[in-house]
Image (cartoon, rainbow, N blue to C red; front, side, top):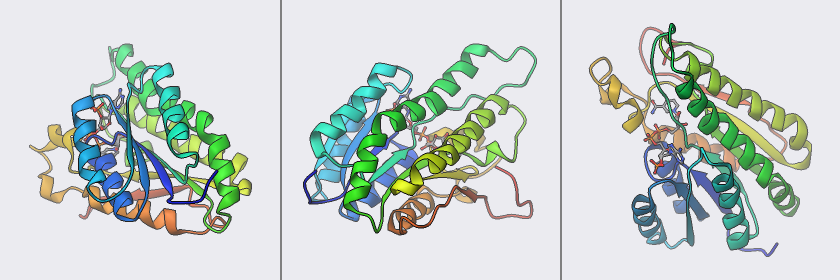
Length: 247
Ligand SMILES: NC(=O)c1ccc[n+]([C@@H]2O[C@H](COP(=O)([O-])OP(=O)(O)OC[C@H]3O[C@@H](n4cnc5c(N)ncnc54)[C@H](OP(=O)(O)O)[C@@H]3O)[C@@H](O)[C@H]2O)c1
């Protein structure tokens, strides 16, 4: 691995939380690999972030397809040869009540929200460890966007919440395997964030009352600035209001 700028790989970088996190990382001097399914949105994101003076690679990929997931890691490794932050933001949610819940939707959520992050971590762990050796003070970070519904369930979101709980468990397990080598993992667990994904809630929660993507980007940055000695397994983030543990 050569020296030079830090490098991050961000999934779900075409829109929403991932896009804002990628922008903040670029502003902090990170080179980036961006991924999502939509090639036009990726090209547009790359043009914007490249305009901030950073090197930006794109890898169009469907997180439901294993070979796509593995290819993203390979593209990043070939481009940068180091990985300081792996941000796992790509995710899907599908609300429906129990009693005939379509298992196809369950499978899709577990594939994109759990299997893809697991595969990507598995594919990237050697590079994360190697980079951590080069930057022992900060180490390297895995930051996954889970959900408050993993611990504060919502009706209709049983499959989604279960997939996000699995993502927390994955981050915690990574810490037991890799934190002694300088690779730490954190699951950020927000309530409703103002993005496309939460648009279906606008009749009940105005976007102005939702968490902002910028709030989460600030947490990601704070994690990247922490030393390798500290492990932050989870960060719950809830909306302001009289009921604390809710989406
Ligand atoms: N918004 C909320 O209220 C909220 C709350 C808690 C947790 N979260 C979690 O936060 C993460 C980001 O959500 P968001 O709010 O930013 O949602 P969003 O605005 O809908 O963006 C979702 C991102 O994930 C990507 N994505 C979705 N399915 C994909 C697939 N099969 N393959 C590759 N990329 C895929 C999308 O890119 P393409 O469409 O280009 O593929 C997009 O970049 C998700 O994991 C979500 O579960 C969101």
